[in-house]
Image (tube, rainbow, N blue to C red; front, top):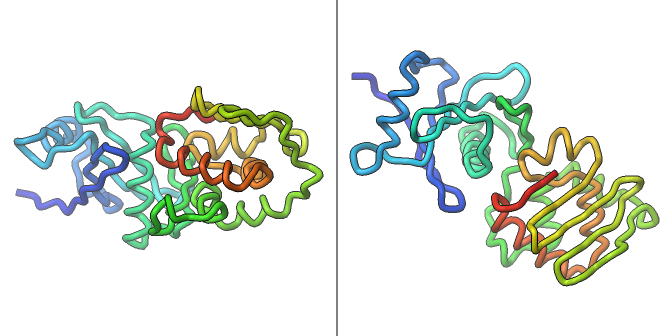
Length: 223
């Protein structure tokens, strides 16, 4: 019987089995029944899904995500958080990393090990931006950032020529810069323009918004 090293992780109520398969030790032809078997609760490890870490020439690693029924999916937000954290812990990737998926290249930043309720505005932004983008956000002049509307549930305005709309009631974040649309939105992360925008609102409002967003990120639409 083949022995397989696996890891079990959870994020926001979902749990996953993760396997480092960069050496291609698993039989690709038998993956569907294998996933169904190991994800079956009370009879095996049990999980909401299974994630394989594979080698990539385009990013730090490639992932394959399988639902518990054995079907393969392009992307899963909570699964993405787990695989990024594990890849960093195993030394496969740095804290600011990218991984290849069927949906494209996803960028992720492994957060510091701190309680969200104790994190400052810049610490919260660091989770969503990464260090390089946070520094770039700080470098955008205030004159290029405009908060045009601010209500209890809505923030809207612009950064340079790009629009920003954050609706906490609808859990909707809209922004139209290329970096956000192409690289960041699929992983529910910020670009430098969004970082600069949030830094212009009232600091207490910004902290509250980011804490809410980080806790409920999988329920938000980024687009």
